[in-house]
Length: 355
Image (cartoon, rainbow, N blue to C red; front, side, top):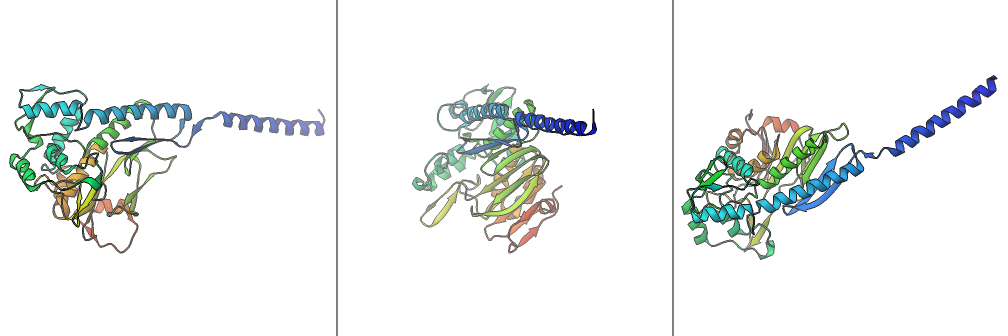
């Protein structure tokens, strides 16, 4: 083959190789990020999968949607369902009975976390949370319950320590116990969904429920960036990056609240008083699972600026940021190293280390 012919042949070969390469790339249906959204637990759940083939990602997201909605139905405190059945049995004061398998793991974990939090996280006060009416009702229609009703419930002191669990059988020594898992069910559902993703072989993903999320792996080789809403509910007060396997949950008085006669009432009910906790504007917790982060955010919100550090230690929490009602930001050194505040005018109070 002559030199000019060889050059023409080489150029043609290069063009063919490039065309084949582009064609093969065009057949790769893996997306850097595949997303799906659906409603559950009175919020929008967003699932993000990294590096999963598009059709497979769509199937996985539909499976998670079905799973999470089944959990929502099983754990709702009002209406027919397993939790309502347990509450009826507790109210009747019956002998130990078999707990529905869809609820028993959540009940076990809630009992443990309640004990660790000195019962500031207390899913047994369902009569109080129902009286305040935050679950599924229009905030414009809400009013504070009567003092008499609150006093009746407080006099009975319902708590998770009233519940006994023996294998699959449960009972309550206090007929005023009424389960309401609203302060942990979202986190527990996300943990179950992450476990399902790992079963599917997904290594990089996040599940975000209106800013409360858990992520595994990375976002195309980069950490996941999390925006933390301001304590009044507007704008972004801070950001942090997570990777590997971490969850971020925030409790704030802006999430579910209503105004009545000039006062703002929020959903974080202090089980010691029967009224929304005072002194705290928001709490953000970073932890290695969503269930504990969810429950701890509520417990530390109620503990407030004076007691959050002690309760966090008891619950095994290593990263906390609390904003009090005066706008002061309290955090431990490990959280200070992770979080980036968006405004420089905050007064920051650094606690003793938690670990």
